[in-house]
Structure formats: structure tokens, C-alpha cells
Image (cartoon, rainbow, N blue to C red; front, side, top):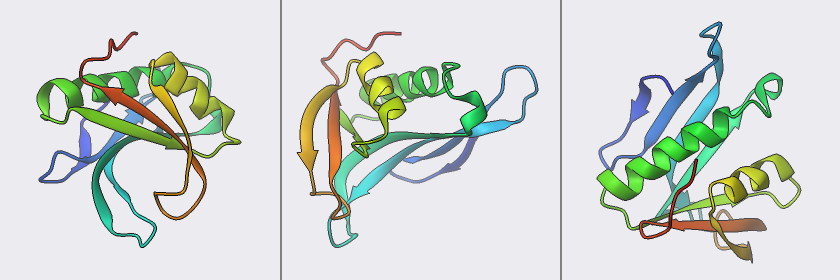
Length: 128
């Protein structure tokens, strides 16, 4: 993970993910407040990742999400975080599984669309 590209007062922000060999931008990892169905920020924090398709399956999202998850539960004083994933986006679902995030089922609480919700608490073991 590279330097933070944008950070907000509440500890959320986005960080660039760089390719190991070329140092070109491969994507971004985010830590942000989830929006409710009226697009109002909630107190719930999401970890997310956006990667170029050419780097899918190379471990970037898992490693960087792991780093942010550890930082969140150890340093930012948040006792848990969420990940929300479109039900049809299997690569992101696999990342949540590898991070040992607990599946909480389908919800429409955030942004008014149907999403799968996953949770990681500070007491959960975060594996590499």
C-alpha cells in the first residue's frame, strides 16, 4: 500500500495500491462511512477495494484490506468495520472470506440497494 492519497478527520480516506514491479496505480483501498438509504453518512465504517481487472487475483486487495482492517481495529478506536458487496461480485466476496469477515446476509440498509454485509470486529482474529 502506498501513501494515503486522501484522509479525513475521522480516520477514513482512500489509499493508492501500486503494482509491486512497475509502481503504477493498480487501484485503491478505501475506508469510509456507509451511507443510509437517503445517502446520509452513518456511523458505520466500511473497508473496500477497487482494482484494475489486470491485477485481480494477485493478492493486492486482500493484503491492503488486511492492513487497513488491522489499523482500524487497533489504532482508530473503531470496534468493528463492515464490507458491503454486490451479491454477484464473487471476487470481493472471496476477499471478505479470506479476511475472515463474518457474513451477515443481504441488506438494503445502505444506499437503498441490496448488498451482502460482512463484519469484522476488533476481537476477531484477522488472518493473512
